[in-house]
Length: 280
Image (cartoon, rainbow, N blue to C red):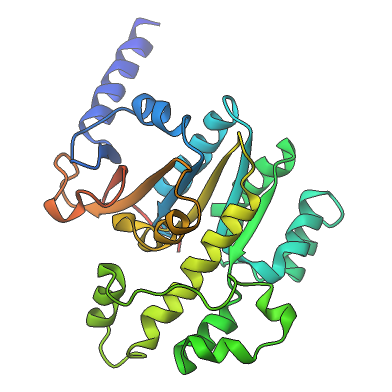
């Protein structure tokens, strides 16, 4: 018994000296999970920015969702589901089709089973509404090749799967400008516009699924909400009175001090060891 207790204390000490992640606030100060949760519980909408293949992001998404579900009425939203797959997602949540049926009816991401199914199944168990918030990818591709005006010729059904047109678009937003600079020759002005139709559409369906008094948690790539831009920019334009919180995921070699470039990315920043394994 004493040996077992001694080994446990040693292992605990090793774990503390080699954490997989550290939580920070926007200013780069370390904070506890408990303190972060106190803030999240008082919000209307939480944008949880992830690295799509990072297991720490996905584990914390599930833990945060479960803990918030004990305190608030929840709704969930996913970048990973496109709006034209909403009916298939609803059918699964209502028990009308199986997991296999969902797989054959919706365009699931390749890491769905390991990374997103636990969240969807939690929503199914708790009977929570879930928004398939993203624009169908073929329409984002259409913007990439033909600009936002290419969407004007779409039929009414297709337009129902995206934010109402024309969407607001500010090419001077730092995130959109940086995207264009980082990928010269890849779509030109249309590259950030394709990002914008995704951001605007996710914001639109987040607000459709958010009900007064409830809390909606939306899961998206960090770049869709980093630096208080992207989805959040559209949310604040449409519903400025709601309370929003953002979470971002970053990766560093040394996680004990947040790098300057990672500060102010979000209200809460999950700093993950860059040696962390990936899910794909």
